[in-house]
Length: 80
View 1 (tube, rainbow, N blue to C red):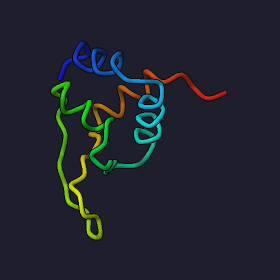
View 2 (tube, rainbow, N blue to C red):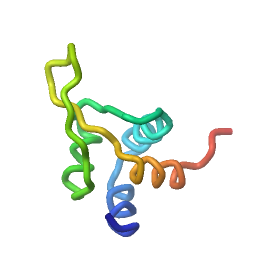
View 3 (cartoon, helix red, strand yellow):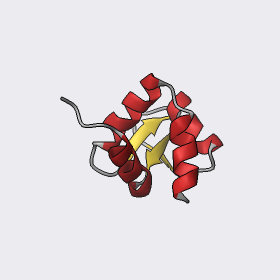
């Protein structure tokens, strides 16, 4: 995945999605997310995802991979 691909995805996120992406990126791997509008945006942007099924969860989940999480951490201003 390219930096341009990541930036185009980031630019298309709402402020709420960016906030949730930053929260997800701050977690240790694997960074599982329910398939919601944020993870769906990653799939639509063509970003690689790792699908997994978690015990006790009825839906498939998507994992935010290290490269995406690193980009999100760089793109998110530090909390003050």
